Each structure stands twice: as structure tokens, then as C-alpha cells.
Image 1 (cartoon, rainbow, N blue to C red):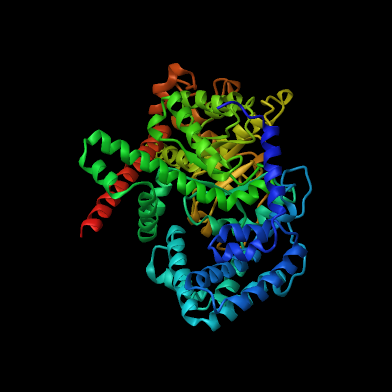
Image 2 (image 1 turned 30 degrees about the horizontal axis):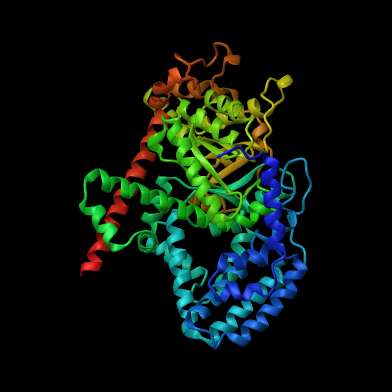
Length: 595
């Protein structure tokens, strides 16, 4: 595919946003009755001004009251789901994007607060109206209300599992606190949770231009909840999809079975399963790609309006190419362009997707080619100064709207900890918690300071440092609190829950601070840390025994470097495990058809 200049992409995004803003009000009820909940919510949240929303939702409530009792069961369920979703959305951070999404960069001004009428505890009257409407409708049809409560409870328990609440008793107690058997009380409890979120405070500061940091959801599910506390991007990879599948096997099995049935008939599945092994393997790999794309498309649609209102600056989903291609740039480019074109057709516009490419020599080449074509990338498996600076220089001249360089802080800190612990270095375990922070601060300074200040002068709005793989160190979160001020931080559900468990104070530009000198000195007892942290400007201090680079001659050494190899092995294993799980679903579907 030919290169598409960034300005042309922005013009396409503006045209799509303006077209959607002209949609007739009457379309809302049509969408709700048809089960198009995401589109309907997007229309109400992002395409109307706050005052228009108040008026239009009053009209909607009147219309619904007149049709609900005579609607089909499917339509009644859809109406209740929409009322629940919109009530939660309107009482969360999400409306702030409509008011302040055009700012959102340090040095600009924006308004993160909501405009329009607000009622009790700062909750918009439109949100309370949807809460009241839901209560009226569930009283009118209590059997539908019971179904909705069961759905709420099931989804909540799955999310709590992802957030690290592994004890069934604790999960049940939390579920009871938010009263999933009473949708109105559940909504009010969730509003309180959104209001008290520390991450929401960071997101509000981002829209006000007080910090450069935008937040993401580092998981393949539960994006909706993350959006309500301020996330504006989503990460996917084979491991995360598999983890989400393991967390909610019933839901994911149903979802995967539906995709398989839509793609292939019974005879095609039987031929694939009984044919040669290599053909069966190809069949399953193609399905894996389709399933991943389907998951990504769904998340793209959830983020689409944020993408449009920020003109492509935020609202992306990170989609990983097959990790088995880490050493083959041509294969990565081929897969990336095919997936990008597919999503372009599905979304009818510029895809709000970034292609995840490994930070290997082949990945550097692939990323340069893709960004030159206007396709944004997220460089993953990044742990070091040598990777980040070489990658930033390679993609800075591309025509992509934005790209990320994802520093995987926790995946560096743990092997550094183990190395220091095995060597018996005093204070090494504690110092290792700073390892990712120390490298990331150095990378941030190198990328974004001007050439006169010894930096590369990279534009942080186009090549963004993204802090990933966060860890909770006994209720200390340095990968958040010490990193604020970087362009992006993507957060695991368990870290999100722990970070939001109590009020916290933080410096919105902490990345500009200095890592304690004694900590860096301790860390330099680790060869892994030296390899990640050192740059030629440091001279002999902290220099590793054999410095790595992203030159092709170093390809095998980079692939075998401990943090890269461990992560790459896990990604490949996750990809192959997904293939095996898909194969099991194919077998099960075939059995069901013959029973």
C-alpha cells in the first residue's frame, strides 16, 4: 500500500467526525432497538454537546416509555443494557473527552470538567435520568431486570478476577457492596468508584494540559471499565488474549465459537481437522489471525470516538503481529499491511490501530517501513537505551500519526532483581524496583530534549514513550508515580485496582526527577541493568561487557538477551497456546454437530 501523509489522515478523521455529528437524533432509538449499544452510546456521549444531550435524552426517555412494554424480548434486553451503559458512562470520566479532547497535551489548555447541568454529587442530570429510567423499566419488567442483574454480576466477578481478587469470598463481598441485584444501586456505587479513582485524576490533568501522560488499558478485556476511569488506549497480544480467555472461559468460548461459525461451515472444519497436519496448522493460524482481528475491531469501535475527537492522537488499539516473525521483517510488514487494510475496510476509515512490532533488528526495519507508509506502530520487547534511541531515530521521519516505544519496566526489573539477589548485592532487591524507572527517565531525556541539550529532539506527540508491564511493589507503584510526564502509561487491571485502593499524591511531571545516585550505583552491579541503561555518552561508567545494538550483526545476541528472550518466549508460547485452544474449540464444535 502507498504512503498516506499524516495531514491527509487527519482530514479523513475530521470528515468522519463531522459526518457522525450530523447524524439525526432519531437514529439513537433505532440503534438501541437493533442492539447497536456501542454506536448508540457513542452518539449520546461524543456527538452531542452537553446541552443537546440533556434535551435529546429527555426525548429518548419519553420514546422508550412508550415502546418498551410492547417491544420484543431482544429489544427490551437491548434497551436495558443501553440505559445501564449510558448511565455508567455519563457518570464517569468519558464525557470529559467531548469537552476537552482537543487539548490534552502539555503546554495546551483544555477543560476536563463536564459542562451542562449536574445534580447530586456532581453527577450530570442526564446520567441520573438514565439511572431512573432503568429503574422504571426493570420494575415494569422484573424478569428482564433479573436477567440484567445476573449479567452484571457475571461480568463483575470476571473483572474482579482480572483485577487480582482471586478469593471467591472476597469477590462475592465486593459484588455485594455494589449490589448487583439492584441496577440503580450498582450504578451509584460505580459512580463513587469512578469519582475516587487516582487514575481518573491523572486523566483529568492530561486533558487540562498539566501532564503529558495519557493512560491505557494493558489487557485484552474490561476496556469499558478502564475507559470510565480515564484510559484512552488498549493493548492486545497473544498472552493477554489467552489470559482474558482463561479468566472468563464460558464467555470467550461462546465468542470464539461464534467467530468460527461465521467464518467456516461444518464441512470446511471437518476437512481441516482430518486433513494433513500442515494444512490443519495453517487453518488454525488463519483463524487465530481472524479472532485477534475481531477482538481488536471490537475494541477499536469502543475507542473510535476518542480517536475521532482527538484527531487520531489517542484512542488506538495495539495489535501484535505473530511473535514467531520477530526475525523476519518482510513477514511482519506483510501481516501488518494485510491486517491494517482489513481494519480499514471494517471501520470505513483510518484504522485506530497501532501494529505491535518487536524491538529487534528486523523489527526496526519493519517499523521504519510501516511508519513510512503511514501505519503507526508500537515497538514492544523494548528494555533499553540502545533499543529506544535507535528505534525512535528510525521511525521519526515516517508519515504515521503516532507511534509508541513501549518500555517494559517490570519485565526488566525482575531479572535485574534476580541477578542482584543471586550475586548477594546488599540492597539489590530493593534497588531493582527502580531499574525500569532509571532506564525510562534516561530514555525520555534522550528522546525529547533538543540536540543542544544532548537529546534527539523527537516530537513526543508523534513518537511516544509508553511505560508498560507495571508492577506493584508492596503498594508502591514507581512505574506510575515516578513516570508521570512520559507520553503514555498502560496499566494492568490488578495494578489499576491496587493503585486506586486509597487516595495518593503524585507529581504530574515526576519523570523529570532524578533516580537516587546510590540506587543507580547499586543497579550497576547488574550486567542486565548496565546493558539496558548505558549509552556511549556515559563513557566507562556502567558500561556493559559487550554493548548491544540493533544492527543486523547483533540480531542473535539481541534475541538471546535475557529480558528479550524471556518475553519473546512467553509471547510465542501464548500464541501457540491460543492455536491449541482454537483447535479444541474446533473439535468441540464438530462433536456438537454429530451428537
